[in-house]
Image (cartoon, rainbow, N blue to C red; front, side, top):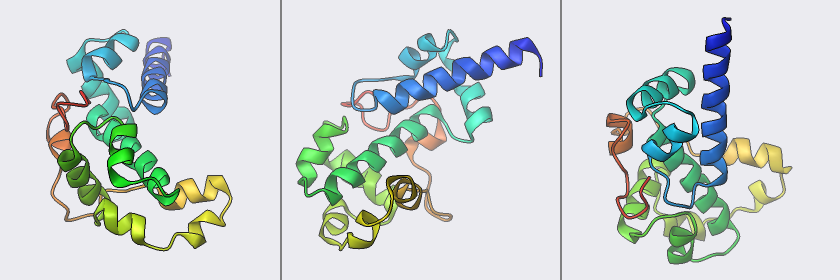
Length: 154
């Protein structure tokens, strides 16, 4: 591996770590790309090549993953929506449904005793939302620089 490639991967990891930490604030591709010291277009291409999905799709998955945890903990749908950075309940519900296959209300009402009794590392792996085959791609998947929720600036 060349030193340039290693430096690029380090920058991409730093950017991904930023998205993991700051998922609930108004991040957009340009801000994350600046953090990685890359142009937005180059960052989007390199991020997709490294991680297999666009930066927006990654950020949406992190937000929905956190919302699932909050809903399992008893938080209401509206509160979970705003806590993970969505300003529109409709956009949040649509993204949640698209990623998990069920509405946030249905997910919240479901029994989560099995996942709550697992160790945290196992629960995160089992509970991680994954885009199912055959499910239409979200706007974030179609274009690396589109925003899934304009109000959340993702």
